Length: 204
Image (tube, rainbow, N blue to C red; front, side):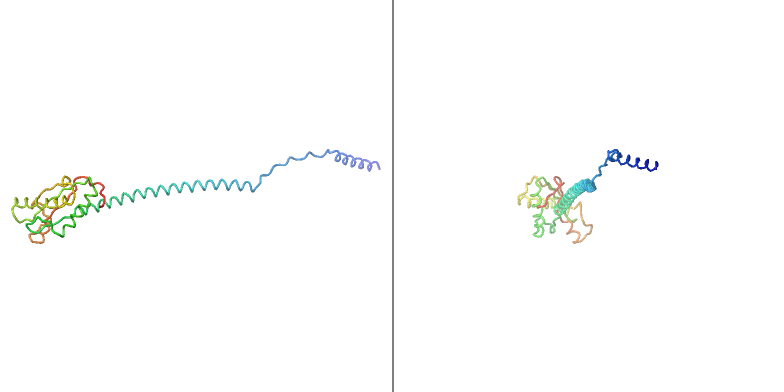
């Protein structure tokens, strides 16, 4: 009986303590980050990294294109200059013992007029040549007449005479070494050489 009384008193004491708020203190709540907020922040960070990388790639591509445009422009300029040089170097030929411009060579001279007009700083030298027949003195004079005839054609079409020099080599510099009409026809010619202003030539 005494033992039962002690148990009852103990139970009452526990109930009383609990009723008076004597239980264990409340545990602090650890704030939990919102999982969605973390994901959004990570996505924004990744988007920023991706945007910077895309901008860097765009800058690199633009620089590559700029370099390619420069290279293409230089290549085109080189091709243009080479093409103009080729046109300018085209020889004209003469009949035996003649210095008059043949109709089929006038077109080549007209091209040279256009080139000289399009390139104001360009200066050229015309050299007159002959085949092996005739004396050295005669052929030097004939070569001079041939070079002068081409120069006069250019001047008559508006080219300043000071931009065109002439020289005669007579029979001294044959193109063809044969001793027949085929070789002689090749050697009766005027050649055209750039002496100034030929670095970057424009097409007419």
